[in-house]
Amino acid sequence: MVKVIAGLMGSSVASGSVHMSQPEQLRAILTLLGRHGIRELDTARVYNNGQSEQHLGATRETVEACNLTVATKAPGFVPGSLSYDNIIRACNDSLAATKQQKFDLYYFHGPDRQTPLDESCRAMNQLHSEGKFDRFGISNFRADEVHQIVDICHKNSWVSPSVYQGVYNPLLRAMEPALLPVLRGYGIAFYAYSPLGGGFFSRPMEQLRMPPAGGRMDQMKVFQTIYVNDMSLELLQRLTDTCDKAGVTVREAALRWLMHHSSLGEADGIILGASSEAQMEQNLAACEGAALPDSVVECFAEVSRQYRAAGKDEMYCV
Image (cartoon, one colour):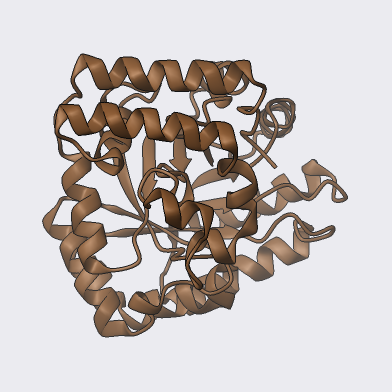
């Protein structure tokens, strides 16, 4: 069974979620996760300007009581962000904010193509040698960069990445041919973020065309660019009709597809987010559902085939 990891980003990287902005709200979600047997939490230094990590620190006792482990990420993307000193500083700041002694998993959030990879990897090895995290993760890197990172780590006998976090859902499947064979060759697990396409598989059509203020599509315009176009909406309507006939919602079908019919295996996972306790409960229930009817699986396959044939399914990294 594919693992489920609870993502704590909220509606956007910058603003988080108003429904998880107070410790008591987050405690309720953490308790819910514990009841469902979820064991991994995913956050990042940049989520909600650092408040996501601080909220975890404020609820540390609940995190421990529910046997939850914490993964977070060193900021990337900006030139110089993955310098040796910045990675060391970011990890120490994250440990202080979350009130953790060590992280289960610590990532490069994204590439910094100005800083040499050997410098960045050296910093991760230093942190690992100090016992500040157990597993090294990378996110949003190209396949050729994965090769480079692993090669650098192996040549220097440094800790090597064991998890890659990237975008993957029934519409965006470019990682299957472009990245997954590389990861499998190195024994690196894949954790899928945006399993619901930033709301594409969970919101009504009219909200996709005109996103409500404050939602993910509104706050993170990149999701509109990636998911909302004439072809994607036409395919979504076809999928909706098929799901209606099968008696399943598109949201539920997308998550069940990832759990039972995707290219993910037992070592892999999906990053499951939510903006409220009720939404998390709904998403977890969907992940616990059975395999889909053949008609829905076939529709997903056809939707993906047409989207890829049109050249729109090309994203798996930044």
